[in-house]
View (tube, rainbow, N blue to C red):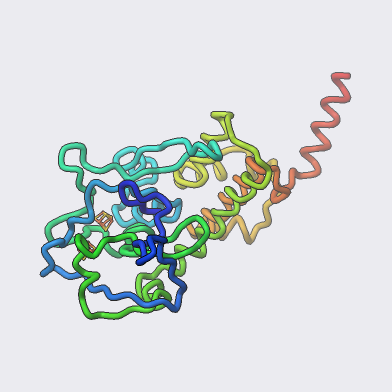
Length: 268
Ligand code: SF4
Ligand code: SF4
């Protein structure tokens, strides 16, 4: 999610009584962003943009880079305090504070811009509530006449697929929170980071290690994850759930378990 400085979890501008205004998908707002506004591209600087796994997938493909190259060049990884899981932050230019993808003409990766940039000038908090992330004294698009319903804006910005993938991804954090478990093992943190963000490396792990010899994965799934990165990402979420939340989403092959039992029996 994209959080403005000092605005993590911000749910919109305060109303007259000082409380935040929370929108539903039927709520309306005025907005039209265009080149003629004096604020044009000013919002693409000095901002924290946390990237989702699907953001990374879309952006690295737009730039025709591997996930490893993209992560190394454009992002920094931090550990979330509540879960102990890595989160990925888009690095702003150290000197100018600008996003590496902004140009005078606008966003260089516009068709594959991240979730939070699609959502802007709105934001969504951890409970799924929508609010205004921008302030009309700085984001002049909010003073324009074009009126949107929130639901119409979400569809216009192509957010459906992002939200669908995000809902699957969110299950990992939910499971961890409900178990009250915090990840402290660096190996698990690394596994999570690779599976969720470094998809090309995760693919090598699946197809070039003993993974498919150890775990039961049907032929149809194998073909799907080989050919389709989105399917591979969903598979990665399942794998992470198995690893961090002890989910029963993967089964070790019977013959592997039997061989292990025999080996232990011989030792004993
Ligand atoms: S500040 Fe608002 S209107 Fe101005 S460029 Fe950014 S999103 Fe568009
Ligand atoms: S990715 Fe594009 S829209 Fe988002 S901050 Fe960078 S330039 Fe702006």
